[in-house]
Length: 92
Image (tube, rainbow, N blue to C red; front, side, top):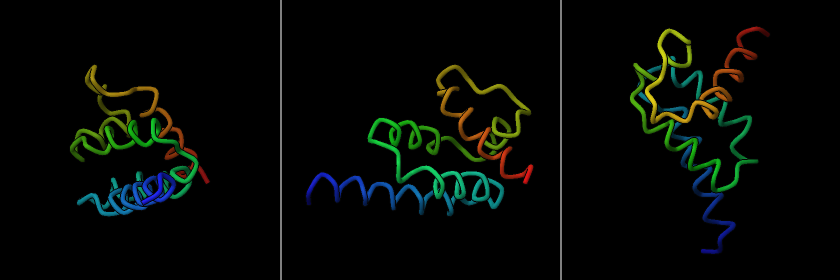
């Protein structure tokens, strides 16, 4: 496979994962986020997305809803992109 095909497959896989998290709440946060942004993400940004998506849904939802502070290992700058995107969607 060519490098461009690899990233296209990775983007498709991450979009699928975003919409099939296991909890509907996180599907509705990460699914629209990926639909809106993942096609523009390079490998580094996809790495950041994948790291966040590797977190468990219950704590991740609390971080997105700003009910709890994420632990130090979480990429807060990237999490803030997800939070801002989600807030913009619910304010429409």
